[in-house]
Length: 397
Ligand SMILES: *Cc1c(COP(=O)(O)O)cnc(C)c1O
Image (cartoon, rainbow, N blue to C red; front, side, top):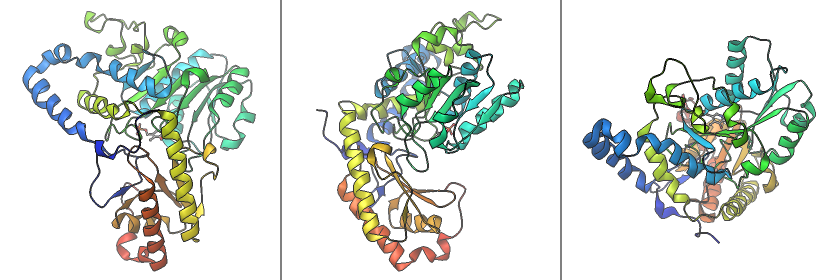
């Protein structure tokens, strides 16, 4: 048994707000601001460049990587942190392609997050050796794993619908066909119990500003299966992935560990905030978290379906098939979400018509779920979303 959930007292949640968007940007953990101030004033301000050693800045990517490794079921030393998820996708993909030089196909699915597909397209253009990206429907991916597939790159939990791939089964199918497996855990890390090592996948990547509450622009992470690390030829061969960065050698020579997946100077402020944010997981049993997340999602579906006949469920009904979010399709979804946000219930919208709600059991409970459904019902019944101020789209939806 872990600590009991939720742990609202560990977070700054503004009064009157029900926050159902922790799957996109997690809330601020209470210790984060104090930590950021300390890093700025005492470490940067007081110790200046000495802080790389004296405040442990240079080790921070590894230390934080180990805490994330714990949360995704990976062994110590197998997770590097830094950069953004898009960059980590690129690194993993390039490394995977080099592991299968005779094959020319990257297999993903058409539900994947666009940036993952865009990075694949960019990499294909850079390599310029006739690689091809295939994106069948998520349900058709396993059947599409043919002998010409070099790498299967999938996002475990679909960002729009919350539909989940069967990590073990897909990885097994990829390996049976001789392909390398990459999992994107953007919507899984901190949302579910994960056993990355047990899945046997070669790579996993993810970000830390969603369920891990690391703050906007928080560093991403990359896992490489320990037995393949020393064979990886990094595409982004920056000096901090070098075996001896301060030897200032002219030629790149990768570190003999996951550190070779580091690139340049780590974002210390963000890493420190993330390290602090990760302390909210101390004592949390991820199976308790998952059980709570499934309960909250089921409750939301039941409440919304009973109250809002206009909305159509756009997520798997079976909680076992779903990550920690529930989506509903509605023609006027963008305006309805803006109206809902104006009433203090924050979710988000994904084109073309998806209203998305994330359930983060660390700081959301059943009374929040019921209150959110009540307010949603009111927005739809009164058609308050028709107000002109809810019609113009902002840059970020
Ligand atoms: C959130 C998300 C991203 C975002 O990538 P960044 O480089 O961090 O902006 C990429 N891929 C997936 C699957 C995501 O969910």
